[in-house]
Image (cartoon, rainbow, N blue to C red; front, side, top):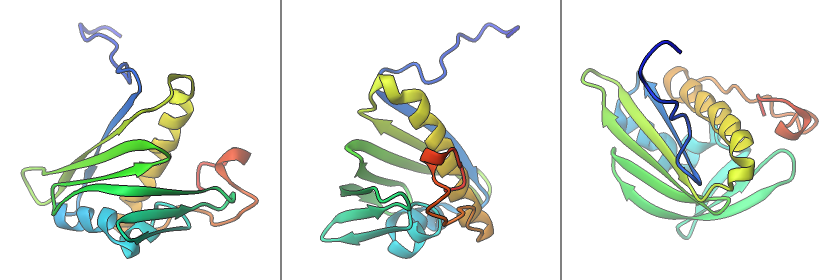
Length: 152
């Protein structure tokens, strides 16, 4: 690539790590992760919390329930998602926005590329929801990830 950086893209075994910048402040990004209302804007058709666990329901009929592992107001949110420990670290960007690092641990290496692509789709849907109040998902059970749609 013409520079001295080594190719380190997603090279940590069993881990996916992405960063995303929001124009919104950390408190608003945290609210999108920590509340049913916030998660409804981008995560799944529903992702509601009951007794410290989030129940995820997707258009294609897949469901999952994962425990909330950690909550630090405006700074960190961590939950189980399909068995992965998924942590969202939030920090102020030096202005009025937020830098978020998402770390998903326990990813099967054989599925890592597909899961990475899914996280990119998910992260962009989250940004659209938080920063612009827009839901990028199509909400059509005939147009899901498994049918090749990234706006599911």
